[in-house]
Amino acid sequence: MNSSSLPKNVATLIDNILEENPTHKNFMDGALKHVTQDELEVLDRYLDFCVENKRDLSYMAESYLTIVGDTLREQIYFMRHKEYRNKSYDDVANDVYHNKDYMDQYMYGLAITSFLWPNHLDMGRLFNKTLPRTRGGQYLDIGPGHGYYLMQAMELGNFDEYLGIDISEASIKQTGAIIDHFKPEFKDRFTLQLKDFLEADDLEPNNFDAIVMGEVLEHVEQPDVFLKRIAELAKKDAYIFVTTCINAPAIDHIYLWRSTKDLEDMIESCGLKIKAPLRLPYEGKTLEESEEQNLSINVAYVLEKTT
Image 1 (cartoon, rainbow, N blue to C red):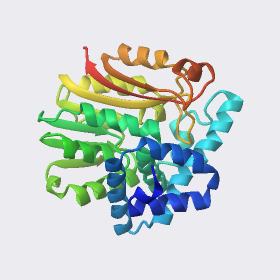
Image 2: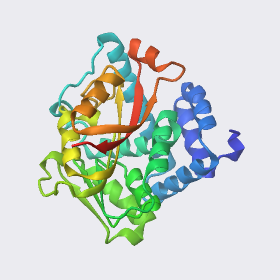
Image 3: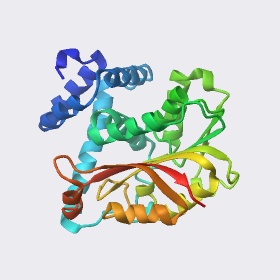
């Protein structure tokens, strides 16, 4: 994609990123070939929102590069030791989830990767393609993070009520802000709760028509407990969308799957069936090569309840 066709905010963001990290240019050039003009316009509007909320584009570039730098450091550790640096929630909670300044940057940076990292973009495309357009009822987002998926559900879906649960105060604030800005008409139809999903004992079994959990399982010590809880809360015919990753080190990733089979066996042991899988290997590698070489794999699944 020619740089002259980039929306103004996106062009400035990329200039700021490459000024700070010129070695990222080849990756960025490849990423821009993968994203559509419409998707760039969505990113541009998101950046406009950030600027209006006193997060200028240099801050947004710094947030993105925080993700890049942290991920690179953890990748080096992983290749040396064949395991993630951190193994428990307590290992990362204070430095990540309860560190407001870091979480602000982390969430803004992740929002940008939703557009500029091809695998992340493809997972979002699967969500946009498969989300039911006409179904009503109750929608649950577990760990909404920066709020993009929840906002998209409001844009594309027709659910009656939306609930987001997150353990991070920074994530709850960012999600609330993005929805207030882009979907103010939903102010009486969505609720955000600052709590541990497994401690949300007020949720009714067999009550939710859609459950979405993006990039959460790799952050918890017992992902099978989360999956079983999803199966318990979902209606029999609910739309369930889950994303996670394999051999993908990051500062707050603590649960390590070494193959898609390990992960998918766990999913299906928890009362869930895979309807539509998306398995995205490391760039330039096959899925088999990625697993053999311990390279990062991103996955997204549309699931259905079997129990």
